[in-house]
Length: 376
Image (cartoon, rainbow, N blue to C red):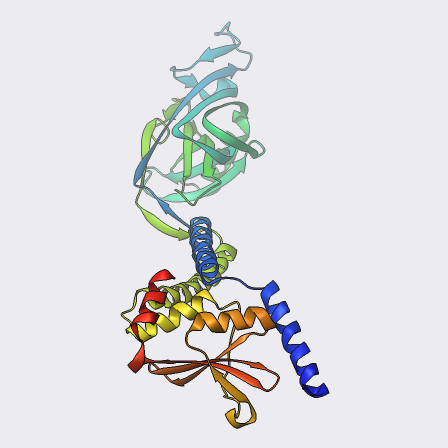
């Protein structure tokens, strides 16, 4: 007859077994779950790496720009010219020039849609040089218009049309005074140009940083004025050669990639460990024992110590099936202890003062055990 202490222990064992049964996850389910985790981590790693890095392809970005300048020379009141102004391409009398009206026309196009920041302004540069124009005595820039900034998105072309009126006498007087005050033989010019700068916003793929000038050169401190145009810098085609490059786009995703990689390594090690158990070469004893442990791990508890056999009435059963039936009947888990790794194991159930025992030995796995193994 069971004592009160033994009844309490038995009741706790039953509750423990019931709780264990409710959270039971089979070996095959755990294996599939581990495989799914590995797949999810691989997909996550690929995605985070794709967001972390980018590799630019080899490509050629082509763009060209065209600049044109139209100008008119407005005259002071005089006895010879009936016209208000003279068109371009002539030689002009300096003392008759009132103002010069300049129209700039600029066009830019590129073979790839891009986001760009464009700035431009009209600048006048006063140059006073020696007569052979090899060295400069004086140079100064004058902003003749406000700087204009355009933020353009997804464009492959744009145009600029700007006009400016130059007070010829203002700059001619400056050059003349410099020449007379210092008694120098000089050659003076006022270069009036439209300065345009283009920059692409997204510089990860390629860098566009282009500056161009459409220059109108007006002679100063001379009796006759022969205005010259210089559009060589503008009217040309250019290329940007993009070489394959590897760059970091997002440091946060890079950190996430590192964390996922570590989790993936841990998961793969666990998965390989589980798979190795299935495929590694095992003895008949190991195969038999592992199949029992996998098939009935819901009701098997691994223990490290064996109870004192002398305290119980030991009933040794003939096969493991008998132990399963006993476990089902008395609602007690089967306890397992390794006596000698690879050679001997014990399975037992304690019910009050009775200990039901099943022993597996590598030396005496008989034909009945082999037949039972084939059924599993």
